[in-house]
Length: 210
Image (tube, rainbow, N blue to C red; front, top):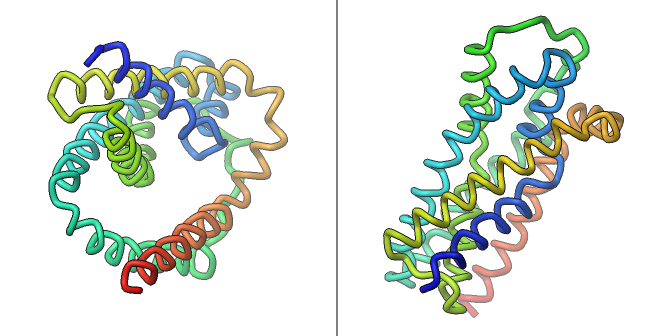
C-alpha cells in the first residue's frame, strides 16, 4: 500500500474528529491567551503524547475486531451500557463546571505539560473513534493493519491533531465567545453526544437480533 495514503487518512480523520470545539483545544487556546504561546504548546505536547497511545492501541484493538466479527455484537452491548451510564452522569449527576479560566494564574511549563497529559487521558472518545475509523477504512480497502501502515497512520493523527490545536491557539480571539459558552455547558454537550450514541447503538443491537 502507498504509505502516503495512511498518513493522509490519519491526518484527515484526526482533523475532522478534533476540529469541533472540545475541552482540549479550548483549554489550549485559553492557556495561550492567559499565559502565552509557549505554555500552550507545552500543554499541546502533553496532550499529543496521550493521543499517540490512544490511536495506536485503538487500531490494534480494531485489528482484533476485524478478525473476529462476532466480537462486534458484544462490544456494541458493552458500549451501550457504558454510554448510557455516561449520559446519566453528565446530564444529571455531574456538577456544572465553574468558569475559572478568566482568573488563570501563571503556571510553569511542567504544570501545563502534565495538565495536557491529564485532560487528554480522561478524554476517552478518541479510542472508539479510531477503532470505528480504522475498521471502516479497512472495509473499503483504504487501510491495512500491518505495522508500517499503523505507525504512519498514527503519525498522521499526531500531525492532524497538532494542526487543529495550533489553529485554535492562533485564531482563538475570533471564537472566544463561543468557547466560553461551550465550556460552561460542556456536561450537557457531552451528555447529549453520549445519549445520541446510546440511541444509535441500541437501534443497531435491536436490528441485529431482528
